[in-house]
Image (tube, rainbow, N blue to C red):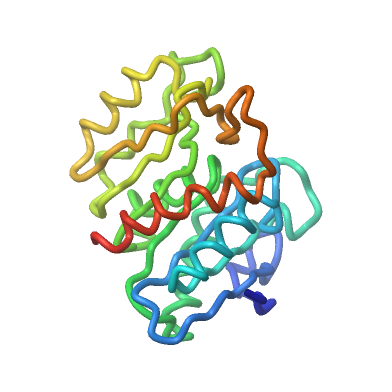
Length: 223
């Protein structure tokens, strides 16, 4: 499905007055899924393309977008406020465009974490949140968790996690974090790492992303 390039206005105090987006419109869709990229990749990464195309083919409207630091051509994420403000702008854009169905915030790693912070701070009010490889802590540093805000997220949350992801090792730390939330669950992907690759079962990134679409779709439809 061909995606329509769009511009999303953001806070002019940030790195850019607008950011790029790709809109997969679906008339009569049951939900609109806003899909953010990870820290080291933009919205055209094959993983996100595969996931977005599969969700669109399954009847959802999908909006991919970039954060201001990517729009500005930088590699490292900017201030948290710039990312959470972008999430707020994305929901405002969807509301102004009257995108179909419920608004769901989803993101790979950093993009998902920034959605959770925006929701915890009341900047967005999605019907649900989907984290694709939530970076609970830096690899090898479980003493630096990024979970304190999660219990303040009111909407249902789905954590899609690889069993061999170093960002959620040990697993018990994530299980405890999820248990502290109002409405959250984990879907474990057997043998997968942070990119959802499985050792000995090499697949293209777009196929990996598309393969997770049924998990995301099932959660969204149940909201």
